[in-house]
Every structure is written in structure tokens, then in C-alpha cells.
Length: 257
Image (cartoon, rainbow, N blue to C red; front, side, top):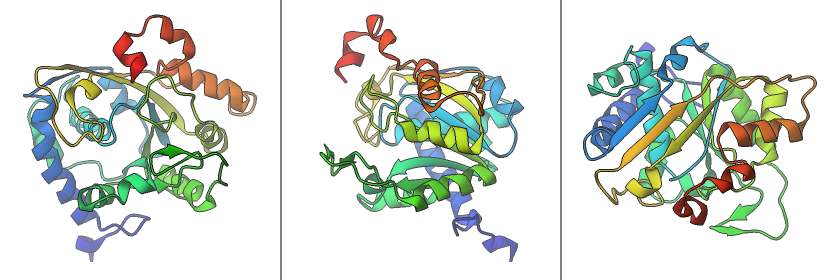
């Protein structure tokens, strides 16, 4: 039955649609009301193909960043220019948007598990466990990379290549390997103001009246055959403004976090 149509991960699209509608409605005022989300570059979203698009972004909270992206992407696809005015754009949301998240984060409680149904691709972090860095790096789970491939073939994938909400941490080479292997269109996003607005998890509103920024940049120019992994990593660092050279102009608050 069409009502019970599923995506490649077995999620029922009807349920996913209602989760996006409900949580989108609940969270809308966090970006347009309690705080103000200033958006740039939303016109780029409408030019993208239906599948094999990888969004790369700096990371400030576990969940608020991703929720903002669902709002901005759907508003842009509905014809709103750099605005999330009028939340009715979520009535018919894009259902093939996925985001990469740490497995331990998405399994920590009922709410994260519900949010995971909206599009999480959970991965096991090889360098970190239970909030602490591990001394011996673990092998990459092949199922994780396979799931990212499946998601790219089905639609759009959001990833945070630093793998942490702390600023100016190195970009993980796994993202570069995904780019080189699957050759997606890579769209950089730079966000700010989220860690001042929300708690670390991005579930609780910490402060009101914050000017949040959300900048969508033009797709990266990448030669998938010639560019090395290290060259792609550097391009990603510059694109999401997390290259060490940005430390010279970053606010002290940003560096500390």
C-alpha cells in the first residue's frame, strides 16, 4: 500500500512525514520568534539534483543544527527566499533528507530515537566513545559507509565532517573518502549563533534574542580523480571556515568551544 511506502532503510514515509511536520511545528519559533535565523544562499537549494548531494557543515549542537537545516531546505524548496516564514512549507516536506549522527547520541533516550526516525544515519565513531577520546582507534564499520552510500543514492545527506561540536577541530578523513568514492555534489554550510541559543544537545533553549546565521555556499569544485584525500580535507576545512587560518579572526568564545 502507498500509505506504508518505505525508504531504503525501512522507515515508513507516512510516519516520517508526520514526525517532520510535528517537530518542525514545535521548533519553528526557536529560529523565527525566540531567535532570528538569518539565511543566505537559499537559492542554491533549488538548483540541486534530487539525489547524491552531500551537505557539509560546522557543528555547534547535536540536534538544533540539523533541525534548522530541515527548515531551511524545505522552505527554500517551497520558494521562500532566505526565509522560513510561514511553517506551512513543512506540510509536504522532502522525505529523502538524511543526516549522519553518532550512534551513541541517537540511542541516548527516547527523544533522540524518535528524531533518528526522521532521517538519521547512525555511525560508530572510531576515535571517541561515551564522550571521551579513545586511545586506540577502532576500525570503521563497513555498514556505516554502506548506509551513507545508500542514502546518497536515495537523496541528500547532511554531515558534520569534524565529528564534534567543538570549533576548529580537524576534519575527519572519512568525509573526504566518501566524497572521492561516491562523487556527490558537495554543498558547504556555515552556521553560527546556535551554541549561544541552545544547550549542547540543542534540545533546550538557553537564551532568547540571538541572531543565528545560516550561510549556504556554492558547491565545492572538486576533481574526484586528481584531488588527494588531504587536498579534499583542506578544501572542506576552508569551505566550512574551520581551517586553522580562521583562528586568527574567530571570536574568543568560538575558540574556547
